[in-house]
Length: 77
Image 1 (cartoon, rainbow, N blue to C red):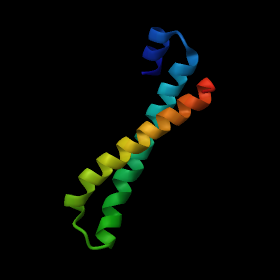
Image 2: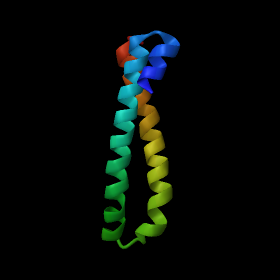
Image 3: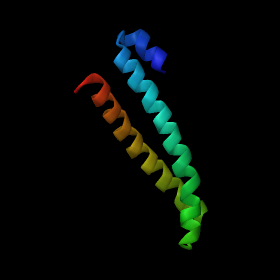
């Protein structure tokens, strides 16, 4: 995706921010997706029911935040 951004926008900062945001997003998704079922099981909430909506919402919010932070830092905004 970073390569596509580099080709389309011709700015290396955009390409790097897209690439880093994707890597960070996937890492956060894996971490949150693997930890939340254990947390919910520990507090006696059915992990099969509670994990899906919580993980989806948390990962979406964190991913957008990380993308904008990375883009702001790399582009000097």
